[in-house]
Length: 232
Length: 263
Image 1 (cartoon, rainbow over the protein chains, first blue to last red):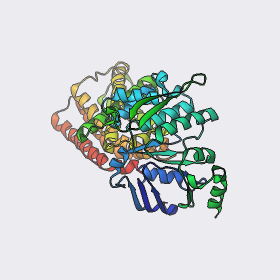
Image 2 (cartoon, chains in turn green, blue):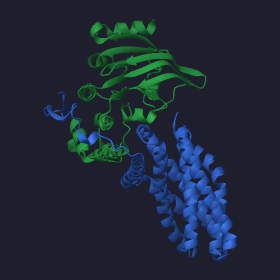
Image 3 (cartoon, chains in turn brown, yellow):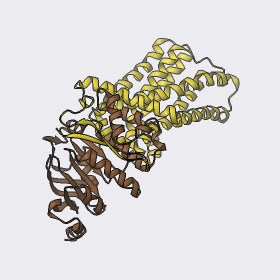
Image 4 (cartoon, helix red, strand yellow):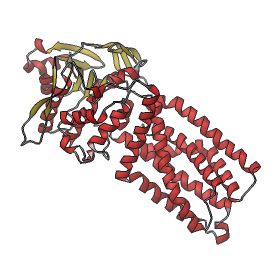
């Protein structure tokens, strides 16, 4: 469960988040929509403990940020538009490295499971720099779920992927992210968000301006909902 | 019981298959993390060192650049100073040229080592790991120290041959070790700061050189002392300065690294 109360983030004098309130229940998949510069990435960086809030309270599964950042990081899996992987290591070596950083026992078994999950078992010994963008993103998801996180944060995971790679990624996202996990995903792609998420929140000018459950909206009306929220 | 299925994604012409790999009721035993803080810290430090060495073994980007640069610096000094055979072998010149070479080549390595983390967002990947951030710092320090030691191990025999000086003296090797530790301890911290900026290549030497002046002076003086076979009373103050610098800056870096890497 994620609870954010009156979150403010300023870079110097420039406010990016202006008293943002946000709540996600266990198992919810929230698509965070918003125009460029709305503060989506900043918000996700604060949730992932990579950035400190200027003001406000952030709690993830009962642990407060930034005071209990290490505990929070243990239950988080983060995927951004950058793969966060080492090009000069193989797929298996990358996962082994992160397994050691998370102190996972039986790392060989877990790495094999994750490579199966993201469909890269046959490329396990290939250098990541030889992978296509789509394969790198699948491995990035593998890295993020390696330690079985309870909460997953996706920051525009489809950026830079072609249609086939996006479709493949959606398959992995559904399988990996949805089962019992709490998920927050930022996206500019309303159609994909409509396909994956159980709730849609619109972030604009540093606050959540509108929120709707998937059951309460026709997916075809999502664009109208988004425009109304951003312009209003 | 909820079964967690994997979709096996293959190339386009192969079908998708679903098969159970673990269950949420009974998650894989592999994912239960070890509780020991000290153990996980040591494990994380070793993981970072292993990762840096493995990546460098593949790419050879960092070491080859450092080595070529170091050898070029030695050659340039040789021609630029127009030294005769006697002056070339003098202790003062040897210590000065050696430490200038290590300093310049070291800066190149420190810059590249941190840039590698930043370029693909890997630094964020490291910072997301649930380990004390000092593990990241010490892992990078040990990795950088290994690279610096390799460069020094190549430079010393080359210098010995070109300048006709015996550099394989235990005292001198001790000074090189202490000097390198101090240089890398400060350099890794400042490289982590510089890498967050757009002008990181220029910024690191500007930040680093003023801070390491005491260590360069102490290292040059102590090296000269050992090359001239001077007495301990002449060398010890400089060795003490080197050791004190190493301890103090390791402690400072340990305390501030967390703030340096955080936004």
